[in-house]
Length: 276
Image (cartoon, rainbow, N blue to C red):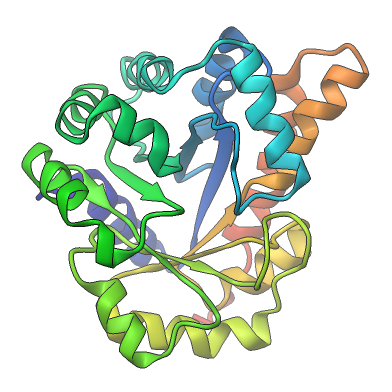
């Protein structure tokens, strides 16, 4: 197992004394070409890590914005293989930014665990988040990812007690994704006061950095979370910009990257010497 790009990025963030910003976008949203333009622009706009969603027809953990983004990706013809091709195209121009795939188990099972893990690694993918694959059922997938040197990044939630966190931490690498609110993405807002002790618990259980997502919509909220977490994830607010661009008949990249800059700037400026 190698987490070289992920580990290097979190080490650099720690040296800078700040949290990272993780930008979630959906593959193929609204088209393959526009999605690739967005991907290429994310690092310069301030994204430290990229989460690339792969479209799925039944994204059960997602609220309406990402559900709609998944449907747009499917309409654009983006399969899981197409998502890997998109990641490969991004990696050809960027050797350093970690890329994490995020999605659901069914397309991976259809693809085949070993073939998927091998192709993901060849595409320059660093990690995988599978929303609907609990640790108890992840053995075969974990084996395939380990063999291909791709990290399996697990989710922890507000309902994960200490015993559950120990299970979540097993065979997890890179970082842990903390789901800050109960429910689906893009509906409730994360609250720093409740997130802070949870982040400490997850860090203690896993020994890994903790990225906090689900419920980060504004620069102000992103800055609050950045003071207590190792990274802040935004997704629904970014795919909403794609929808707004389509409604206005505008290219999507400009809107998405402008929102990324605003959120990333807030994260970068969140910690003062007193709060580090």
